[in-house]
Length: 117
Length: 140
Ligand SMILES: Nc1ncnc2c1ncn2[C@@H]1O[C@H](COP(=O)(O)OP(=O)(O)OP(=O)(O)O)[C@@H](O)[C@H]1O
Ligand SMILES: [Mg+2]
Image (cartoon, rainbow over all chains, first blue to last red; front, side, top):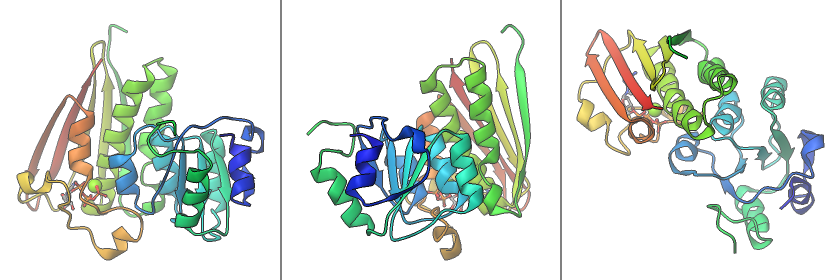
């Protein structure tokens, strides 16, 4: 799925990484606990979260993720946007809840653990 | 690379916002050295977990990453409260983190077991009231 398609499905705004909308991603995960992202995530390229702090960006960076989606209308700080841009990550923001946003992407074919549906 | 290369960092314990900075820098440095992405991921995750631990449990500390021909060593030293029961701390789900740490997205008790999982060797030396030294090795 293209990052641009994620934006459309989630009715999201692009906060940074406008140039990455054509990039293909194959799996995603959703969590507000960075501990769990670090412990359970394998190769997911997209993280959906309602947690807003710099560690969200750094955690995603450690996991080699390429796109972050903030849910529930959360907005990243300027510092976070700079960190993400510096790491070549796209940031989207949607008003949807975490469950709903994950569900929308999942039913449209973006799976959890790198598997194809 | 016949000689080893050391990266040193002071990890600030006062400011949670900066926690993880050293690990981000190490990741960049290792990329520049042309280390394989899989090894970089292992080192990054292990160091990041350890760095966050130093900030949330020990008030900061020092981190050294030594890259040599056959391995990468990560040495984390703090003067925090120490770990009373290391076997217990190594168990998945054991955490003494406060609710305020949990609200920052950490404190599931998964960090130490994750550090062990992503490294080839890990030793913890800790004295209650004096501090903790964690040494991890990822073989190249
Ligand atoms: N550097 C340290 N100094 C003192 N205590 C520590 C240190 N590192 C870990 N601990 C202790 O070991 C426990 C387990 O650590 P671990 O990293 O596995 O979990 P956590 O940090 O509590 O949560 P998570 O890592 O999942 O966010 C901690 O809750 C803390 O009590
Ligand atoms: Mg931890």
